[in-house]
Length: 193
Image (cartoon, one colour):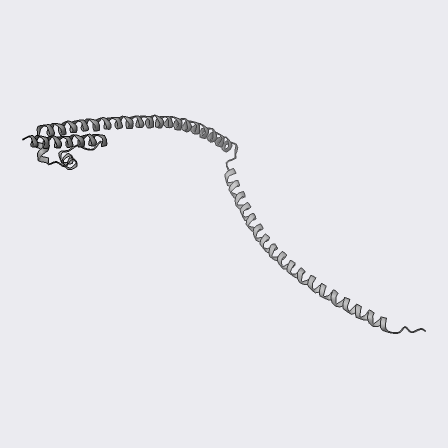
């Protein structure tokens, strides 16, 4: 009988130690988890009143701990959301101020446009459109003329290079002929008359 009480005491000690570890780890306390980690049978945990009370107390304490942790997290999230909401409200106020400023600016600019339109004669828009079209056509014509003139300039430069080269060749030929004539005159005897 004494050996049985000692065996039960050892099992209860293992259950108690396991529950302490599970509490530190914040693990979920279930009969199956305690039986597995303490290496005792589930039957022991269900039938032994002390073991049953230990597991029930630890489960209640773990539930309370999880509930407190959830409450703390919820409070932190609420504070975070509250801060975000305040920041969003501040941003909305800033945006509304910017919108009012832009609306005022648009109204001023529209007033200026209306003033300018009032100063223009009725056919001014048509005249401006016609003048703009004429200017675009002039720009296009000038672009075409520029292209043609650039082509002519390129051709003239090529002709100039060719003529410079030809001139250099002719100058060299003339210089050679002059040198040969001078050397023939220099070697001929001078006749005295």
